Image (cartoon, rainbow, N blue to C red; front, side, top):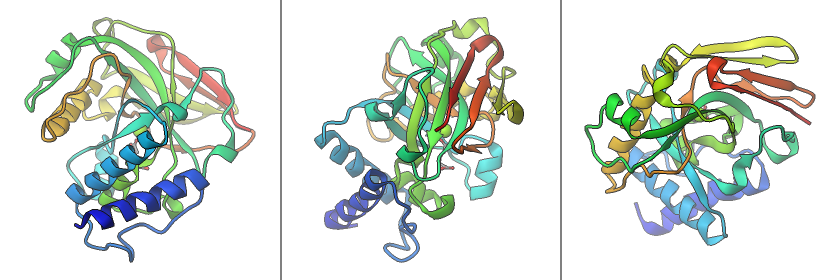
Length: 261
Ligand code: 0L1
Ligand code: MG
């Protein structure tokens, strides 16, 4: 793929994100043969363009980490993207629909590592030994594509729909909790809308970090220490609406709540 094409397609999704408007997926007409490797080149260009505008990466995020989502998209591997500083929402802050196109939320277990992880054969145990804290988090995904209608390369090019993140302040020792059986529920206006466990994330959320390390290793990169990492949704993503009071309960890991205006 020509560099001019990479830049053009990165700009296509970037402008849609900035203007909060839906676009047709890249693979519809613009570039039907887009591959996964080409899609990551577009994502890398998008990240560079955001940095050139003064934005800063906060940490990586994993996507398509559940069996259900992988089956739906007919893939075997998860994907990654990055959360930027402007996407971070403080605990107890309100979320405004005006900042998004069609936002959905996912409860996720966040990790902060105490040392970099570099390698393609890192185990769950090694991830847990390298982890400083785990914390409750909510990711806001907001695909720039019409009706969240995309192929895997499309969503990779769109920075895996990354749009917002609430990182809970409560930090826990990863070895004090069984993260695979830990549950999370989403209640909206008092009604339970979704429930899932850490096992929905590739069997164990630490496995998600091992897979991230494997993917970054192919690019000569490490999963870095001291950055919050979103490991993937524990439930299906739930659509937000103005007027929602959202309560996300992660049991022993903590609780997050916010309202939507
Ligand atoms: O974080 C995620 O798992 C979402 C990845 C992109 C797929 C989507 O937008 O539903
Ligand atoms: Mg997610």
